[in-house]
Image (cartoon, rainbow, N blue to C red; front, side, top):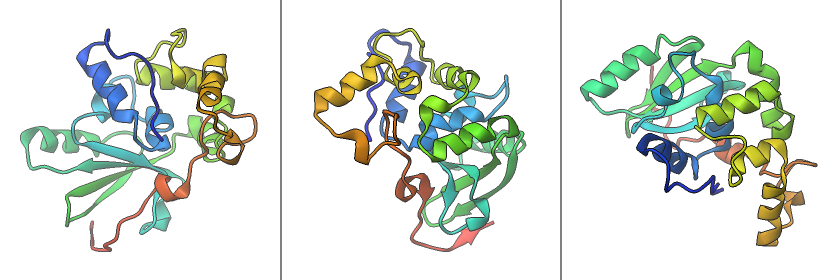
Length: 203
């Protein structure tokens, strides 16, 4: 689902890139990717031109359920090789594998213990029940100001009037798509779990 976050006209180039990137990505990209990294490796580390999406699993790898999987487009460039070398030693990485036919590389992360409850809330589509600390972490990751009047992502997290108006303006009945008392789409396994047609997995 397209998520129009806010006016891009006054933002710097990297912030614009990040917001444009997450408009049509998975809910896991929007809401779970900010769990990863440390104070040295956050948004400007994980989000680059090779990043494709984040997932909660892979239909071909059930052992990685209840994890966070990041999919990148592999290219044999100096930048990517350096990035790969740094990424695989990040805290929480437990493995990587690729589907060799289309250069899809998947990095598997454990859910950080401090965010496991938030992860569980995500699976149930209970975005407004994330801890306050994690809500603010999400907004900081995506370079969004909580107080921005046109900040739709913040409105989803804090259930402000903006997201309610978003639904009203579109004349959509949200009850079939959202968890009760929430104002954004509940994650669907069909999009949040990665599905690859071929099983040729290189380890």
